Structures are given as structure tokens and as C-alpha cells.
Length: 184
Image 1 (cartoon, rainbow, N blue to C red):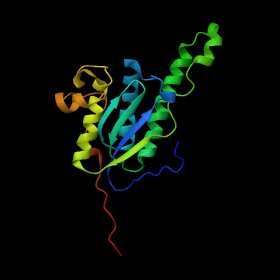
Image 2: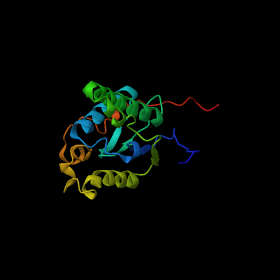
Image 3: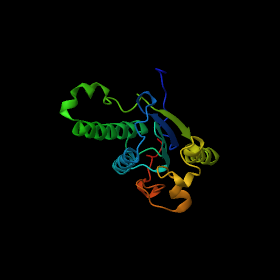
Image 4: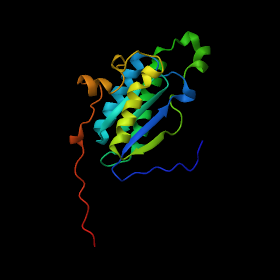
């Protein structure tokens, strides 16, 4: 793992983010978990005021295409998303455990996410389109569905079918104009 990971924030670029589940386990392998992740993403989107330009939730990883949030950074967004989702999942696991099966506790997930995330700055329209196509066709490429509109956990249906999903896509009104102070 790279130790000196550099992130480039502040230029107003979109960020193509990839985040994997712990040890690439399919911890997002059920519709319920994928729905929960999208619910948490929408809560984080509203809290930090950023635009989700695209997303896909796969069984063992996620891809996001987001703007920089109004006040914080994409790193803060990812921390809130990962922590919010992990807390809910681990709490559900604890509630569902049978005390008579204490020996199985070691097998219950203790981690949900890999440390860190991959972040690629997207500053051109062709690159934005490339990343959206990549995300939307990921479930097809992996053999999860035969066409992208059949995968409910991506922004494809918002773009091409006009559906409102669990996450608001391209809600640019959330961004306020930042006025720079005059140069001295």
C-alpha cells in the first residue's frame, strides 16, 4: 500500500473514487446491504453538500463520481460514508447474534472496509463520460446482469430512465458559488 498518497483537492474537479470491502469480501452482496449503503450515501450527500454525478455499488466495492463538498474534502465524505455504513452493519450483526452461538462471534465481520480509497481527479468532459460508462457497465462486465438498467444499485437508471433512486444524482443546486476575495 502506498504510504505517501497524494490527493488533489480545491480545484473544483469531480473525483472518481473506488473503495473496497475488507479483504474484497462480498459484504455488499445482498440487496438489503446495497440499499443501506445508498441510504447512507444520500444522508452524507445532504450533510456535506456535494453532487453525486454517478455511482455503482458492487458486491465487494463501490465507485463514486462526486464533486468536492462545500466545506470539507472528499476524504471527509468517504470517512463519513464508510463509518456510517459500518456502524449500521455491525450493529445489525450484533442484534441478530444468538447468544447460544458465542463460538461463532469470531466469524462475524469486524471490519467492513479496506483502509483508504482510490481517488482520481476528473476535469474533462470526455473523462467524466468514460468514468460513468465504466461504472454503469461494471455489473454487466462482471456477469451480474445482462444490461445496465437491470442493476438497481447504479446511477444508470437515473441517467437513462429518469428514475429517482435512493441517491439524488446531479443535484447541482446544492453547490453554492464560492466567491474568492479580490487579489491584493
